[in-house]
Length: 293
Image 1 (cartoon, rainbow, N blue to C red):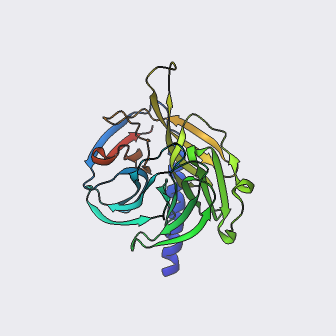
Image 2 (tube, rainbow, N blue to C red):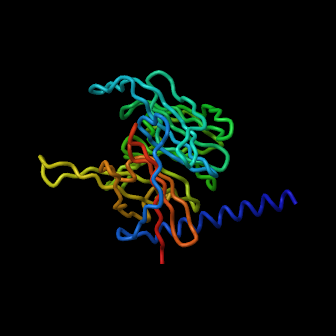
Image 3 (cartoon, rainbow, N blue to C red):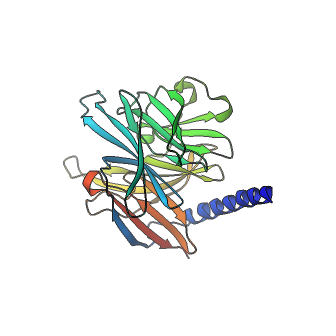
């Protein structure tokens, strides 16, 4: 009976992910999204970075800056991982990182651990990858990398860790069975997509990850920048997007919904998205749904 339950759970999870991939590729720029909930976070959230939803709880990575960056100096601060409920109430939290390595990035959940990269707050720097038990909130250091990592996913089918660099300009991949201190230059692959910079990514099955992000554009050199958010389904076999769609949703502050943390799940009729696009006192969990015909 125990093995039957495990096998059933495995196939159910694979089916659910297959549904999610199929629905995501049905998204279009004009897909109608409806705001169903907006909940203000009831704790100091600082500068949120990545988010996963596990059961009824949300886990949010965030960076607290205690000294601002100057030139190529990464500044100083603390990295946080928060656990909160659907009312925005804080349940638990831990700090991650050390010294100049204090900037968490986008996070992923593989069914057992939450994966969190923490880096210096500057490009071409250093990062530490942690895995965190969502029940105990205990963190274990997995490896160190000589580059800034802004997001990570665990490809549970290929048994690899896949990460993106600062601005998601480079992809990395490590085999779980042989994680070593290989030079990043030997591992990196350029990202061929440019219209949004990925801020948060999640493994969605079928060797694919879903990334959300934004890019700022100007109609003239002295014009006010316009921030466009978007979602991309990326094939991890060749690091190329297989579906790209702008997400035309903004918070009251003008931030794109995919400004930083997001989570997407399948519903009976379409998709439900969770977003925390704003910092500090403005941090709000926005929930949107869309029906896909």
